[in-house]
Amino acid sequence: MRDQIIVGNWKMNKNNAETKAFFEEVDAKAVSDKGLYGVGVPFTDLKTALDEAKNLIVAAENVHFEDSGAFTGEVSVPMLEELGVKYCIIGHSERRQMFGDTNETVNKKAKKLLAAGITPILCIGETEEEYDNGKTKDVITEELKGSLADIAPEEYANIVLAYEPIWAIGTGKSASVEIAENCCKLVRDVVKDIAGEDAAEKVRIQYGGSVKPGNIVEYMAQPDIDGALIGGASLKPDSFIEIIEKTK
Image 1: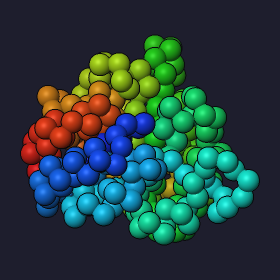
Image 2: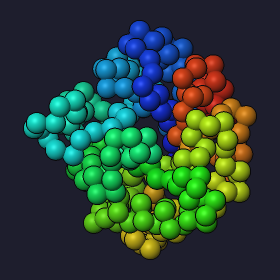
Image 3: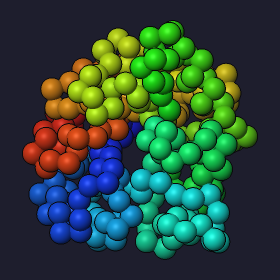
Image 4: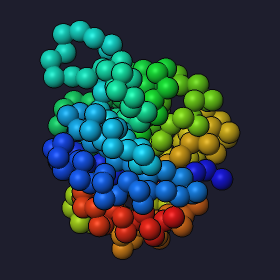
């Protein structure tokens, strides 16, 4: 059995005082023998989050693939290492659509993180137009093959893949349980083709897209959904605590 991993993605929200208050309210409750709970926080909140975290895991929301250099505004893997960061979200659709992330750059980031012992939470997913045109399988396959190129099969136990249909992110729409499970199973099948059955069995796959307390239990009951990447519902302590309590 794969351990579950449920992570909130705060995006560009919360200052240090708000981060401290969130952890004071939520951290003690984030304990389960089923797996891990955590939050991805802005770079400016990482130190505060790590200082406050006893149970919650803390993820960065992005990273650059070079160790240093003339990359104004970027943060490197060694910088995350120095803070003690152990998880990092990469390839989120907002990064791909707004800031030019590609399968190639996501692949470079994944390799750099794995080499440093930091778990990448690697996001993939299709647009509403692609979904409506029946291209979900093609998009998922292309993104996975590009983003996971030349990564050794034994590393997949240290990777989290987040399937997020772009049409369900921040829209209030959520994929039906059937669609979410079918797509997460497709992700696992593509990993099997890329890296073999053992890698496919060990990799953890999250569903993301308007996940909230009212639907988390149904998603987590599916055989190929090992966790969730949660947006808006992770910003409020009471809703995130409810998600934790419902999935312990």
